[in-house]
Length: 232
Image 1 (cartoon, rainbow, N blue to C red):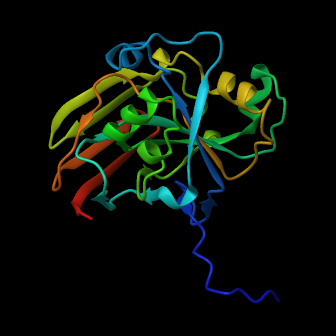
Image 2: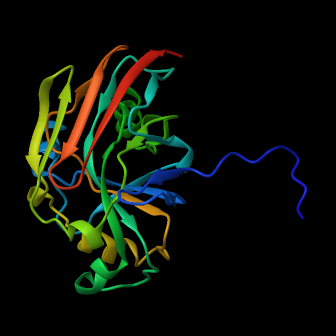
């Protein structure tokens, strides 16, 4: 048996609706500018040639009901509500027409973002790591298995901040669908069970303050509630 220098962190995992089993998370891939309206509000045009990505550490994962701290180094912490795809089978150089076979299920997630740091680093053509790979910045609802809900192509996606609707769209407005994203991403990675793909956010992103309550939902997929905690 291996002897570790220190105790390894617990496995990051999400509940699965309808079972006591947990979905262990290995990697988190995130898609940028995948709704036309959000790209416009951020001052960009969607690149329809190919999607682009950034990543978050699995340690950023949090479950429904969590209190997530307001992180250090920012005065402009934003919510982004997203459809999350959970991979359940190996996928490497897979065609979009076959990609749904690799999907275990779907969830609703938040890509919390230090917007000021993202924008300042982007302006200097630097990576977005400080803006995106933020501790506790990836809350995700329990996963709804595709075997139970199918593969949703249309569904209302909504975020409410302290009861007020801030984001409201439909996943049908995704520029790149889940199968297209899996097909493209699998050309660069051996995707497999434990990989999550955050598919992008619609317009309406905005800042949070300590004490705020965020309620995110995707019809037929899931719902998520988190509270913004005190600054760290």
